[in-house]
Length: 347
View 1 (cartoon, rainbow, N blue to C red):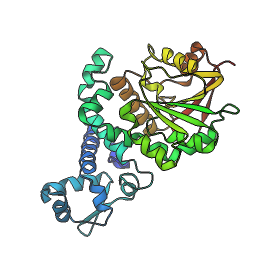
View 2: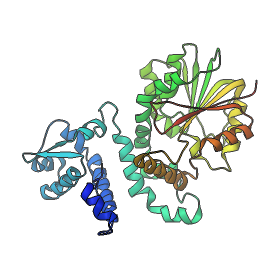
View 3: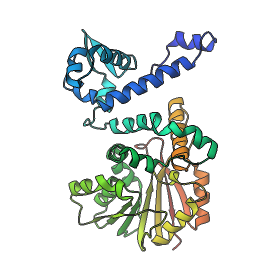
View 4: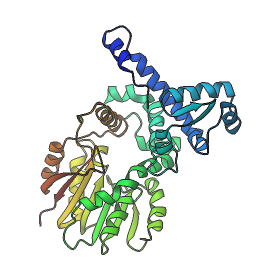
């Protein structure tokens, strides 16, 4: 993580003896260095064992002196350790930044480095217009980033999908599930595993469904899960579903669009069917790091998608206005920073 000032340094800044933005400079520089390390697959190299700067330079076809400067910055940021002239992954890097490590966040972090240092080049334009200068989906296509985006979106659900499925009580005798924006398919897979008679349709943009095919095949559920490419804003969803999932989706849309889309989802449900939403529902969590990260997400949703984060009260209101009843929220410990909102179509 970025350099965290110690007690003396914090006192120094609080006393106004130096500019606090110096820490922001170090944080930004270390994040850019992290981007380079992820692109070079440095952490995978070091997962095989410690390497000197010279050895790494040979592996990466890099200049040893320049690479050493990068490695030293990564060491200062806590991503690497240096012992006896050799570099190795820190414990955190071994857990979170090696791509094939269990629970890895490497793709998610790399995606965010690209967002900050590329997509946000148009931030000032979006701030002035109130709309995305370039929609994130256009940026993903132009930069060839859909594979990275899909990998990033699958990292968190891989460890949380079963807990989420266990927390949701589907309507009695539910047989059909629609997962709108289901992308990787991991949530639909978890629900089908938990409910043996359930069949599911995973609905998303064609570019977002790339990983779902492999995930469904690996789960052995090809006879119960169907992939359907489409766009929620323009395509028909079908009819008669017992439940619909809207996971990490409602923040994509502005207040001028979301009510219509929720009405569309309502029409796709059986009478008495449920909609299940999973999303961030607060901008003010109790801890500073969580607060900063959620507000980073909020800015991204606004300037790159034209959407926004909504507190539960706003989500409840728009659901009721769209015709849903029995709106309730539920927290799941396995998905910190996110909450479930469950509502029904009237019977």
